[in-house]
Image (cartoon, rainbow, N blue to C red; front, side):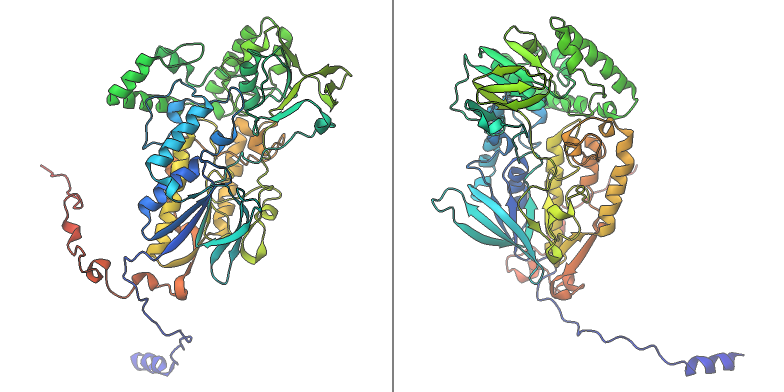
Amino acid sequence: MGETLAGTASSTPEPQSPAEKPVTLEQRSVDEARPIKVIVMGAGLSGIIAGIRLPQRIENIDLVIYEKNPEVGGTWYENRYPGVACDIPSHSYQASFEPNPSWSGFYAPGAEIGEYWKHVARKYGVYRYLKVNRKVLEAKFDETRSKWTLKIQKLDTPDQEVFEDEADVLFGCIGALNEWKWPEIKGLHDFKGKLLHSANWDDEYDYAGKEVAVIGTGSSAIQIVPAMQKVVKKLDQYARGQTWIATPFAGEFAEAKNLDRKDYSFSEEDIERFKNDPEHFYAYRRELEHVLNSVHTLTMRGSDLQKGALEFFTENMKKKLAAKPEIFKSLVPPFPPACRRLTPGPGYLEALVQENVNFISDQISHVTSDGLVTADGTARSVDAIVCATGFDTTWTKRFPIIGRSGKLLSERWKDHPDTYLSIAVDGFPNYFMSLGPNSAVGTGSLSIVLEREVDYVCWAVQKMQRDNIKTIEAKVSSVRNFQNYCDAYFPGTVYSMKCRSWYKGGTYDGKVIALWPGSTLHAEKVLSNPRWEDWEYEYVNESEHGWLGNGWAMAEVNPDGDRAHYLKRGIVDIPPVVV
C-alpha cells in the first residue's frame, strides 16, 4: 500500500506557478513619509479643524485650503441676518482643544461665534495654508495619475481668472447648508421694495421703522422675527409650515446655573469666574455636554422622553401664545417634536403676540411690485421681504465632482446620497467629506463629530503614506452596508415620520439623508475606530509589499536619528505591578 501511494505521488505533475513580475524593493525606509498633497475645499468649522490637524499629524504634507469667501467661518461668515445666533449652547459649539470661557451668553450671537473661529484659525496657523476668494468650479479624478485636478476661479480679480491645481487627496469641507436659494413664489423678483435672503443679508439695509414680511418658519425665521419685531413698524410672518418651538436646550441646566431666564446671558461675574477658575469652567463645560448628550431618547418613537416633550412643548406654546390662540392652532404641528429640526427660539413666541406682528398661515399666491397676495386674495403691502427659506439640501446642486470613469457625484446621488460613514463614496478614490450626507446630529454636540471626521481623514492619509498606498476607496459593499444600516435604524425614530424637513432633503416622507443614524456618542465612537478592512487599496508601483520599503528605518538613514527611541521616557508602556 505504501509503495503504491508513493508511486502515485511521484507521478503527479507539479502545479505550474503563474508568471509573476520580478520582485523589486521600494527605495524607501519602512517609516518614511512620502510627500503627499491635500487640498481642502472650504474653511468653515471643518476646514479650520482640518487646517490644524492635518499639518500637525501628517509629515511631509503640502496643504492648501480653498475658500470662496474672503474670510474663514463658513456659516458664521455668510449668515449675518438680524438675531443670528447659536441654537445650541455656545460652550458645546467650540473646539475641544480651545475652550472659550468668555461667551457672552448661553446662545452666543453669530458674530461672536465667527470671531471665536477666526481666533482659532489664527492661533493654530490655519491662515498659512488658506487661499480666500477662490471658488472651486470642478474637481475631477485623473485615473492615469491617481490625482484630483481642480478648476478654481479667482473671485477677487477683475477678469476672475480660472486656474488649475491638483492633489493626491481631496477633502470636501463644504457642509450641507451653503447653497442658498430663493423660494419658488410667482412674481418674487417683480417686487420693487427690498428683497433679502437670510443667507445673503445686506448689512447696509436699515429696516427700522419699516413694514416687513418674513417668509418661513425654520430656524432662521425663528431668530429673525424677534430681532426685527422690536424695531420695525409692522412685521408679517408668512408661515406655510408648522413647527415645534422648544424650550431652550438644556434650559433647566442654564437656570440651575443662575443665568438670566429671559436671554440666557452671562454676567461679568460669571465670565470672570470662568476665566480665573479653569477647574470650575472645565467642570461646567463637561456637565453641560453630559446633559446635551443625554437626550438622544427624545428622537425615538414612543419613548417616555418623546411623550414628555410633546406634552411640555404643547403647554409651553399654548401658554406663551394665549393672547393670540389662533396662532397656536396654526403653528402646532401634527408630527412629534424633533421630526423637523428642534429650535429653542428664545423670544419668538413672545414676539408673535405683539401688536405689530401678523401671523399669516394662508398660502402665498404671488408677489406684486409692492407686496404679497395670499390664496384668499388678500394683498398686503410691505417695504421689504425677507426670505428665510433655507438651502438646497439635495446634495446635487454643487459644482461637478467627477470620479472614476467620468461619473458625476450629482448623478450618482440623484435619487438619494449614499456614503460610507458619511465620509466617502465608492468610485471616488482619495476623496473624503466632512458634514457629508448622514453626518449631522439631531441632539448632542456637533463639533466633536466634526473633529472625529477630521481625525479619520488624518488617519487615512497617514495610512496612505505608511503603507505606500496610491488610492484608498470605500468598498461598494461598505457603502451598501452603511445604507442598509441607515434604512434599518431610521424607521424607529421620529425623523422618518411625516413632516417636511431638510433632514429628508426637503421632502415630506423621503429618506433621512442629513442625520447620522445614531446618537452623537455613537458617531464619535464609530469615527474614532476606523475599520480599514472596509476599504479598497491600490499601491504605488502596484507593489503590495512596498510598505516594507528597503529594509531600513529612517533613524538609520538620518545621521542624527534616535536608534533607541523605544526606550525614551514616556514611550515605554509600564504595566501595573501585581501585588
